[in-house]
Length: 231
Image (cartoon, rainbow, N blue to C red; front, side, top):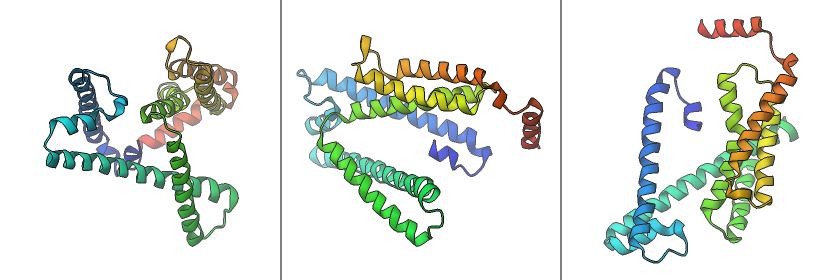
């Protein structure tokens, strides 16, 4: 999403879409095949299924080749970690600190705030890691929150002109809140928390948008915007 948002020209979107989707399909199929191979190869289930790739490298490959592949895994982890740290730092520094706390902050001051934020986020992440638990479970929980809060809103905004500001806010709050609530009550019926939260978020967006139609721009105004974009 970030790469598409920063694309140099709208003309590149089609080719970027093909490249991006091809890579995602290949990567996801590869991950699934590794999991299936682990199920077949290991007669005794692993204590931590998330280590299946590392365990397969350990038992199947030459140590030299295994070392290269493990280095690749660590490189991918470090690449993701530093990117997330920079994104968190930029968001907290620019979108929160500069917007709400110190609007006249100098660039050098913001640099130091950003550095402090990186350290703070890293410490919080380290503390969470010490609590244990599977990475996949944490990722699934976070993905459920993002998917339920923003997924219905993005889809409805693309295909329905009637989404209002209040409807969007209601959908985000209901989606995120339902994810937390569903998990706290123990995921009834064994249902992934994103499913009920996604549905209720979509319902909330539609219901509140219909109730606040007065806040929509006039059709004439939106048509004018469309005409300007076409020009």
